[in-house]
Image (tube, rainbow, N blue to C red):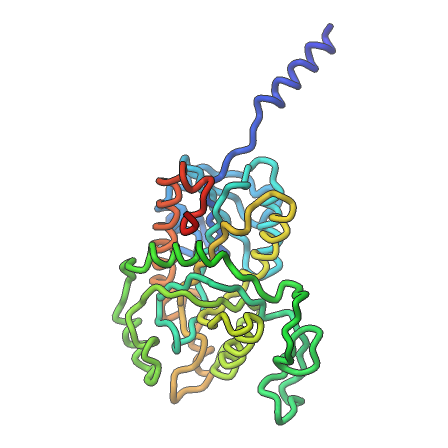
Amino acid sequence: MKLVSVLILLCGTALAWKPIPVKVVVVTMFEPGEDAGDAPGEFQLWVEREHLDRVLDAGGGYHQLRMNKDGVLGMVTGIGTAKAAASVMALGMDPRFDLTKAYWIIAGIGGGDPADVSLASVVWATHVVDGDLGYEIDARDIPADWTTGFVPLRRKKPYEEPVRDDLEGEMYKLNPSLVNWAFQLTLDTPLKDTAAMKASRTRFTGFPNGLRPPFVAKGAVLASSTFWHGSRFEDWANQWTHYYTRGEGNYMVSAMEDSGTMQSLTLLGKAGRVDPQRALVLRTVSNFDREAPGTTAVQSLQSMGLRQYSAYLPALESAQQTGGRVVHYLIEHWKECRGTLPGQK
């Protein structure tokens, strides 16, 4: 009789337990101190402004999770492709959460191409291109007729055609309708400008977009675990992106982790755990990815360090302000957005 009672109790408990339904996952990459109350990283403004007050165990991920009463879940992946892929996969497989209808907003800072964007500008990613997968030879061995020593995987020279159809994570194209919707929704977002930003960008003569106050744009993100810098690498980034997107994508901003995050979301989608079509990548410009005219790449790189970028704090503001508008819309219109993606009505 006691055994029967125990079995009934266990069955009842199992039936009563349900995974927590998540509406939006905000993915950030680093937080150097506490989650709130000190110098901010990518996570802190989200925690404070979206009231992510419920603290949850990391569950195998890099950093503790936080959630609010509206179904918004925030995470920190850790810096680099490997940590991002592992942390997102850990969350995606966590039985505590139902992520099948969740939207994903990957929101972080990066280095911008002054030909396309200015400091603290916002870029909604049309494509995420991996900048690590490939072959490479030492720069001193590059043939005279090559523009780079970096060669696409399974190819014999830079940008060799045709681009393979069986890509292994080199490029991810985000849902165009959802990206366009997010772009249009946030196009008029007022973005912070500062005297320091103005002084920094005036050095980029010959780059009209780089001289502008911050604005919202659409473009491709190049993700590489190596923090590269300089106009020569910037030329490579533009060509590499053009190659892998078959001319569709225009490189605008660099990142580290986004290809790892997109790889995990892709695999989780195959497992039925998430919907990769609900993913958005938002990168804001904390610094330019190259030296200013009349200076060297070494001088430019040495002037930078974490939280010493020319637009570090304004870029964090841009990410939360712009991404927050998307989060609020999704929550406020959840009855419709749960089943139908915005922009696809």
